[in-house]
Image (cartoon, rainbow, N blue to C red):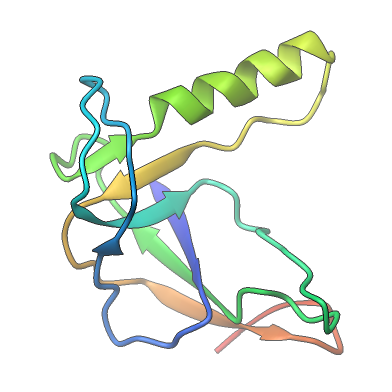
Length: 120
């Protein structure tokens, strides 16, 4: 499965960071260090300067059965219900949490002039 991580920092390896909350499939809320991953390759958030809030996009390949990978079922379910309620034709991107350091396949840097991520 191909997932994406967005960050303003450039890393050799993606290291989990503290998160205030997270929801595991079992319904447990924890305060462990995690990395947030998504199936959305085009995450974009414009800040006050007109720049992309995320300077780097990391591409990660993981086995869907990896024991350290957890779907954010609560948020994913909410997005699916939203799409159904408003007859949205957009696909609902999935969100995941990962509990260990990650090697990434490739990294892209935001190109402000082209308004997209460029591969390095």
